[in-house]
Length: 133
Image (cartoon, rainbow, N blue to C red; front, side, top):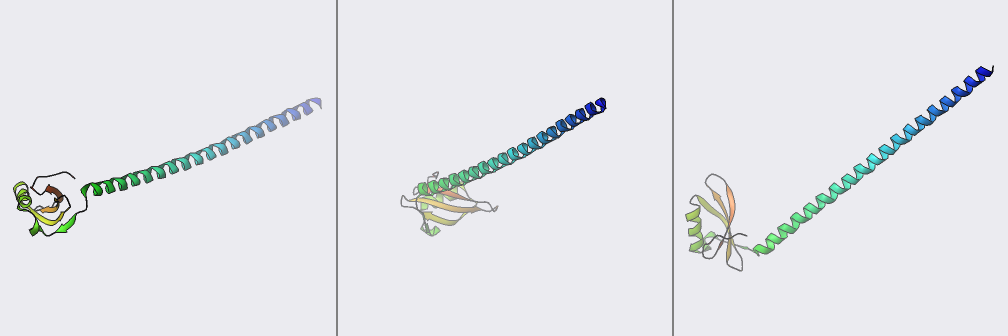
């Protein structure tokens, strides 16, 4: 009987140890899940902030470019100085001027298209010199 009682006590102790170990594993799993969730949320927040920063930078760059170019007002292509139309003809013989604009500094913004269907924007001063904007 004494042996039976010792065996029962040992079995009870082993079962208690297993139960404690199972609880510890469950607690660890819960902690891992919580940490993973927090990490995912932090990554998503950082990605959102980065996207917003990039968008803000792009907007700032667009505004800076617009400010640097000055305010252009549309003009008829026929109103362009001969030096500007000659520069286009000389450097881009297949180009046609679709739209033309001028700013207060007598700089011209020209929207041109080529026979092959490509299009682009050129900038020239009043003397027909190409400028970068």
